[in-house]
Every structure is written in C-alpha cells, then in structure tokens.
Image 1: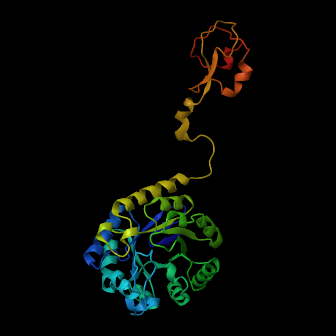
Image 2 (image 1 turned 90 degrees about the horizontal axis):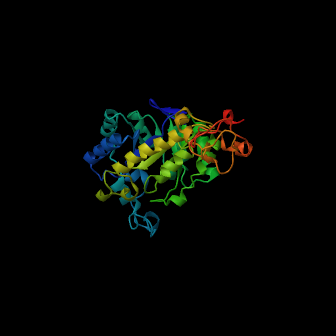
Length: 348
C-alpha cells in the first residue's frame, strides 16, 4: 500500500485510474482543460501529462534512424522530431492544467523525459512521477527522479527481467520508497493477446510492490481482467473523441469508455473479496431454494416411502437429498399430504 497525495493505492483501496492525455489535446489548451474536466467527470483519480520538448527527445533529422518506417505504425513516415512537435504539451500549459486538476479534485502529474523536465516539474511540486517504458533504461534519469523521494510509477514495456531488476535497484537505491510497476505492451494499439496479464501477480511477488497496467489495447476488457489479477493501478490514454484525431487517438478511450472502466474496474476489485466458503448472510434467504426431499403423493399412516411417493425437488425445507437411501422403505407414522417436506418426525 502506498499513497499519492491523500489517495491510497493498494489491495484495500479501489483501483487507481489514470487518464493519460499525451498529445490528445491537439495543441489546444482549451482542449487540454476540457480533457481534465472530462476525466474528472468520468471518475478518474488522476490525469497524466508528458513533459518534454522535441529537442530534449531527439535530433531534427530525417535520416533513416530518425524516421518511422514500420509499415504497421500509426506514425509511419513521420520523423521523430516532427512527431514530438505535434504531441508535446507546452511547458507553459502545465501550471494551468495542474490547477484545473486540483479544482476538479483529481491528481495531476507527468512523465518527465529528461532531467530538465524533472527540475521543471519539481518547481510545480508534482506529487509523483511516471517513467515511460522507453526511458526505463535511462539510469541517470531514474536516479534524478528517485532523489525527489516521491512515489514513482514505472512502465515496464519491452524490459527484460535483468533490465527491470537494474531499474528497480536504481530507483530504490536512490531514495524511491514508494514504487508501482505497470505491466505494459509497447505497441500502439496493442492486441489483447499480447498483454500477458499473468505477469502481474508474478511481478508483484518478485518486487514486493504495487503493480498495475499501462493499457494500450482498445476497449476496457484487458484492464478489468488486470484488476482480477491484482492490478491496483490502470493507466489509459484518454481523448474527448477519437474522431478529433491526434497522435494517440486510435488507442485512446473516449469518455463513455473511461466511465465504464472506472465502474467495471471497481466492480472487479469489489468482487475479489477474500477466500470464503459457506453461506453469506446475504444468501440466507436463498437457501430455501435448494433441493430437498418432499412427499410427492398422498400417503396413509403406515405407508412406506418409495421412489413413487418421495422426490428430491425444490424448495429446501425437507431433509437433504443425501438421506434418500435411508428414507426409502421406512414408514410414515401418520397421514401425509402431497407437498409435505420429509422430516424425521414423520418416520415410524
């Protein structure tokens, strides 16, 4: 169990839902603020930004190394620099966005992509940090983030176990006491069968920390399944409308989907409960609908119970079905009407 601000994260608290704005503001501050409002209205606990400039991310080149050529990529043909120009959240917007988050009662934080971004976010007193999967191997960045001693949420897409060990060790060794690891598949969008959610309980046991999911699949099914496997945090890209376009729109949730995610993930968490056998108090009225032994034909005093006059049926007011072999052949001690529950006091 950890805390971010006043919000507790862990098995004893409902799932912590993070709406990832990324570049879905489409370079409009008005849209960015509307995304905050929508996320809060949907019941998300937090809204996350990304803090970088094109120049802190890459070089302004169009050579092969700096151009996206993957035929399956949403961004095929873009240079890295142009893509980050389109997707960046201007630093001068951050304060207004975080202020709006506070006004709407949700947590605002960000992913820094270099040390200057950490310094900037520290000046805004963010309550926690997110590390993107692609920066998991930037150990100097991890050191800088950890030394803030604030909670860290680390995505683990593409990371081998040795890489993850190294990153967790760097974070913990430099002052990070509150860590959340997010199972993540770094493809956009990610097919559900690439999610490998069974890694979540393994990761939780291995590192002794809270674990969640950074979800790039379409829909909410994968995220809800993650809750059932112990995820306490769900991060989901969020947009006002996929039809608005944007670099992440295709795999982002719309408000209706985010609302459903909040509701259904909470239901999944509540449903986990504890290891429990036996009747709940809430089931007490239902037990009468179990099967039991009933007289199915009128019987005269002295008649023997037989397959013809005793049946195992609902409701459950008679003897349990397991007694049928004992009852057969015994005789009733009085006249018995059809529909009478069989009980020991009927037996001679």
